[in-house]
Structure formats: C-alpha cells, structure tokens
Length: 238
Ligand SMILES: C[S@@+](CC[C@H](N)C(=O)[O-])C[C@H]1O[C@@H](n2cnc3c(N)ncnc32)[C@H](O)[C@@H]1O
Image 1 (cartoon, rainbow, N blue to C red):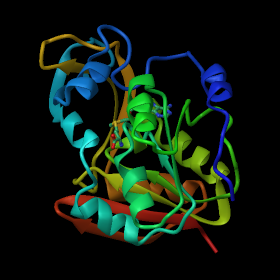
Image 2 (image 1 turned 60 degrees about the vertical axis):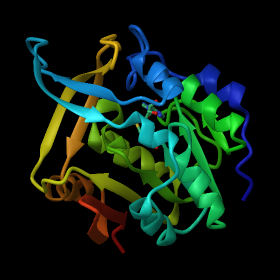
Image 3 (image 1 turned 180 degrees about the vertical axis):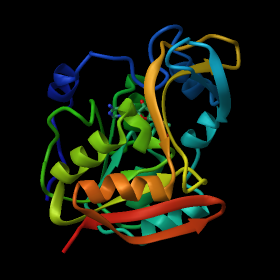
C-alpha cells in the first residue's frame, strides 16, 4: 500500500474548532520542540479553570531516538503503521529502521516540519479529518498519552476503528494506574513560563479503557508493562 499523501489537502481540511495539544497562546510546544526542552502540562479544573495538578512532559524525548520500550513495542506490530500525534517522528524513524512501513500524522506544523526535514513520512493534519488509506491501516499507534487527543477516549477509539483494516489493531499507551480515568482541559507551559491555549485532553488506565473499548466491540489481545509504561493491543472482537 502506498502511504504517499497530499499534505496541503490535509492541512486545508483541518478542523479549527478547538485548540490542540500545546498550540495557541505563546506556542510553548513549538518552542520546546525547537529548543529541545521540557514543558509542563497543567491540568485545569473544568469548572473553575484553576490548576489542579501538573506533570512534566519531556518534549526533548520526542525529538530523540526511540528508547528500548518503544522498540519493544514496534517489534510486535505489523505495518503499515499510522502513528497518531507523531510529533517530530521518533516512532516513524524507528519503524523505518526496523523495516516497518509507517506514516505519522500530527497537527503541529513545527513537529511536522522537523520530521519532514529529517526525511520522515509525516503529514500535517488532524486525525479526525479525512486520512489517506482509510480502512487499510494495520496498526494505529497511540503512544505518549495520545489516547487523550481531543479529550474523548471513545471518539478516538472509534476513529481508529474507521482507519484500520478488518485485521488491524490499535496499540495504546495507558496511564500507569489501571483505574485512572480523567478528562480535563490542559495547558502546556514552557520553561520560560509562556503558556498555550487550553485544550481538551484525557488520561486513562487499562481497566477503564477496556470498558470503553468493549462498548465499541473491541477486545484486548494483549496488555503489558515495560520500563514502567503500560500498553494494550486492541482488536475487533471475533
Ligand atoms: C503528547 S504529544 C506526543 C508526541 C509524540 N508522540 C512524539 O513522539 O513526539 C501529542 C501530539 O499529538 C498531536 N496532536 C494533538 N491533537 C492532534 C490531532 N487532532 N491530530 C493529530 N495530532 C494531534 C500534538 O501536536 C502533539 O505532537
């Protein structure tokens, strides 16, 4: 299957209905990517807009090569792989080095331009807009918390099922706590204190994800822990 795509069409089709991860405001995500720095994700209370928790997101890691846990994951998947929210493309690069056909998609123009400059197969656009090769992807990859994109876990799983071939699988990196289930508005804050617009995000652990998956006719084929990270492989129930 060819994964060539028209990047201009994808960008033009992108929905602008809500801010996405780290975008807007002073664009701290783009800055952190360019400077290879970390950034802090602040979780906001939906009603009052107050900061209720925060966690450091290692943006620099996304510019680096895939680590041992990433490689373990990739060695177990079948191509063609669609890396959803691929950032600057470390998983696409690693997949290519393993001989696995892979395409990344990301809304961030900065992330996509870093990936393209590195010669990687990455397109700019939202995963919720029309994609090349819908219904033909063998693996939909959601790592680094990307199941949280859009702040609606079920909508993301549903979208992945539309993209997959009938024998395809969704591989999801989960929150370490299996019972964790939280949807919120986040705001990314850079090391210089500049903030993004607020954006919808979600975090979910294994047990709660499996409930949402079951409602969509998806079952777990495998779940595993490696280097403190939790993953699950989902597929349509036979
Ligand atoms: C937590 S970061 C993950 C970074 C990435 N996996 C890496 O290795 O660099 C989330 C990524 O999802 C992207 N994103 C957010 N909303 C998106 C959407 N609707 N469609 C595609 N990508 C999206 C962001 O631009 C960001 O690069």
